[in-house]
Image 1 (cartoon, rainbow, N blue to C red):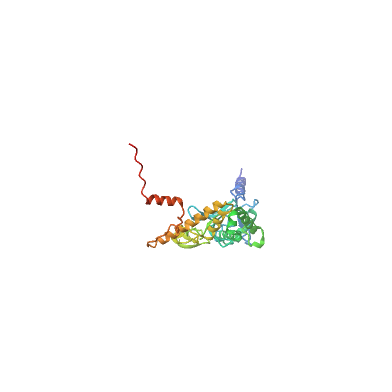
Image 2 (spheres, helix red, strand yellow; image 1 turned 90 degrees about the vertical axis):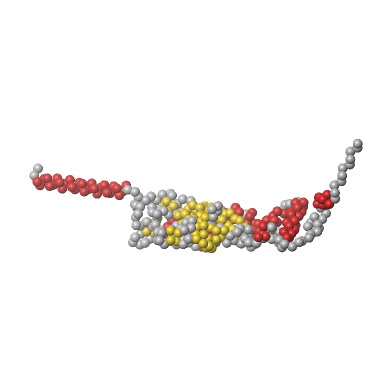
Length: 355
């Protein structure tokens, strides 16, 4: 083999090695780790030429870290509020991860309690929970929202305020299931009908709520434990941490949820003139379907409670107060009269036994 043949052989081998390298790179690119448009997660991609945003489909070959992936880092991230009633803490859950993946799982959002006025003017404090999930085919709508969590919270407030505000207090307590069904239907209609505004790209599964009388609920502090969580719409700042610009973190913030509860110390002694409207409605419910004897007993209890309140209030003034038995409702009571007579008269001596 002469020098020319040796050079051709070396060139041939080098060509084979180069082609093999290109083939290996191509195979790695085709079989490498790509993002998957699954049933539990999807991604949004931005066209670098037109700026249009579309959803990742199974035909696209996109690797993690691709610059086309919309990661929502330059805007409010896709989050929603979650309130813990036991701990009175408000935090936020994210719909996206650090790689831009959007969760398609079913989530439950629970905004902080908010007041609602019934049709007859009674105030109730509502804690609502709504289960939802992002719809894959409509996930691109999320890119149009500046603040997903606040928009969803306002819609929940509006839906429950509309459903409860159309009912009287006693009707609300009898139609809890219907209220939840109506709110679920209204929230879903906001997603499907254009007349309700911009859709959020989600599906509503159910809406639930619990309530308590705002007139009897004291003001309470809510701790915001997530640095990215916003203060609830129904609360006002009281104290708490401001973001630490040096560390990039924020200490827990405390806000106060205002209610209509009275601060009167005598509120613990309800009398006829101290019943709130809601309590009167509940009291009237106690009379429905009762026998005359039961109604008479209820009326007597109210009378005795009112008399006790009057005596207690006057006694707190520090003066000497004298009431007759009739004024205290004791006149004509045989049990009381026997007890008084036994206390005033000396006991009769027993006859001596015969010797």
